[in-house]
Amino acid sequence: TPPIVTAVALVPIGIGFGLLQAPLVNELTVAFGDGDRPVALGLYNLMFFLGGAAGAALATALVQGAVELPFLAGRAVPGFSTSVLVLALGPAIAVAVLLARPTPTAESAAKTVSRQP
Image 1: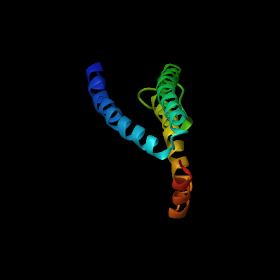
Image 2: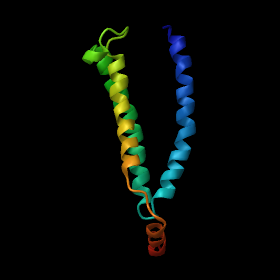
Image 3: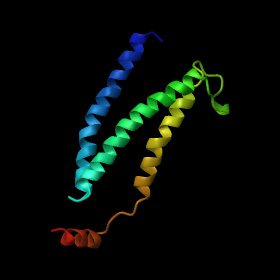
Image 4: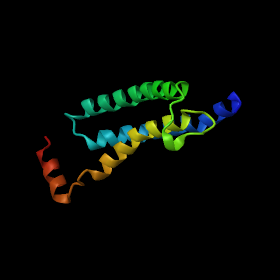
């Protein structure tokens, strides 16, 4: 595809990241108490920016090396499908961990609130 098509396709992705970042940080600040909040925000930002840098580098290496998984062979751009699949593993694991965590009951939430100063 021409570069302008790729550039235009990236616009909604950038808007999506911009619209998603603030609610994610807000949810993170609500989920952690005062003592853990700075560490949680620091880890979130570390993973966000490290993931962006490492993800781009990994995708470039897979496409440049034309690395294809056997079931993805024969695509127009060798390595592209593999890189998308590999990069999707991180968010998929994060969602799985989030869904697998135990949900607090009203009783445990009340105990947590009563312990805070």
